[in-house]
Amino acid sequence: MHLTPSDPDISTIKRRIDNKRLDLQPDFQRGEVWGKQKKQRLIDSILRGWHIPPIHVIQIPNSEKHEVLDGQQRLAAIRDFIENGFPVFGFQEPIESEIKELDGLYWDDLPEHIRSQIEDFTIRILTISDYKLGEPGELFYRLNQPTNLTSAEQRNAYFGEARQQVKDIVEHAIDLGFSRESIGFSNSRMSYDDVFAKSLLTIEQCALSTKTTSNSVTARYRKSLGFSNQSIISVYSAIELINSSIAQRKEKTKLNKATLFSWIVFLYEISSNENIKKEVIYEFFDNFESLKELNPKDERYKHLVPEGLSSSFVFKLIAIYNDRASSRVANTSSIKLRDIVLWTLFLTNNKNIRFGNNMIDNLSTNVGILDTKEFDEKILLEIINSWEGLFL
Image (cartoon, rainbow, N blue to C red; front, top):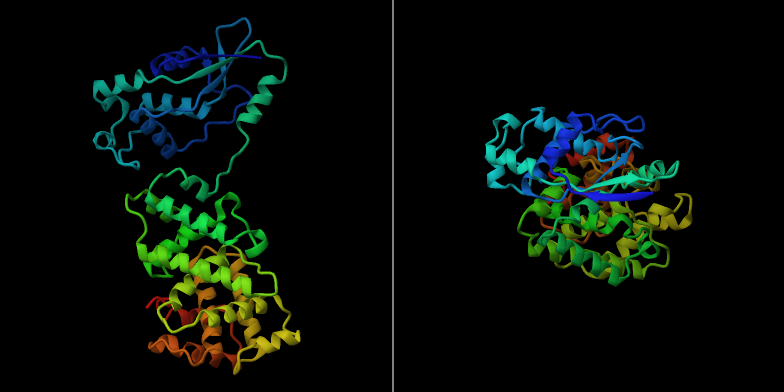
């Protein structure tokens, strides 16, 4: 199989499509699936003069015709734009003033110099010839194996202060010893980056009811300014406390992305009380993580239940925490439920610690009243929703 490179401009490519010398829809190709937004992003890239991935075409033997092997969606988007199928979207990030002025304009409405700029844009085309039976199909398969980048991997392309701050925290966590063996999961697919970025954004927002999505973190990465120094210091402090807490334990620690996030946020929240000693945090971390793993019939479980609460009640709280750590973890209800379970058991375990806020100081008592009743997540959420998380 031989691949010959060429760099025709868009006007030449469009002419080949119109003359049916370039077939965008051979039998092996899927239909045209790109939506308008994806097509507009491609045109935006062309307007900026950015690189477009090469197109692979197959030369039909004894013919001047070619079939598109890879790049169908890109070429169809260009064709549709030139045929007035959709307008320019001028507000793609990062916003460019010249492109912003073109917002809403179709091909026929564009200034002549802009149309010429697009028509003169060249795209690398690799023409496949002298191939053996099956070689183009194998190449098509290899070119189109799904990458399925995680949100954190996609955000890693944004070079800015926020991205670097998160990478520095990840490096520090790994230096401390964060790994699958120590905390329960690795940084595969940039998992730590994702947790730390969402933790930073949540801390900056000071609100558990504001959903922290992949899109909101990406939007934060796009900003020129990084996260605040106080937020950065808080996350550094939290992961160091978590690492030290794990080191104190005899049992294996099994965190996941959701529970690591909750611990970081919780440790930030209780940092408002400067009198809490690290040893108190180490002990609570050990007790709580042990409760998560033990059977309530185990004698050690009963020993870990805070005074004044029944084993069955604590088991219900832990069950809610575990359930909301393994499913529906992205919604605000899950985050709030995990948070209030941590707070309830911490305050019940440490009744001498006061925060000077009635909502916090009376939390364990108010929730503990449910110990004598049948309760579920809905009742617990009613208590949570009467106040804004524990960011006060």
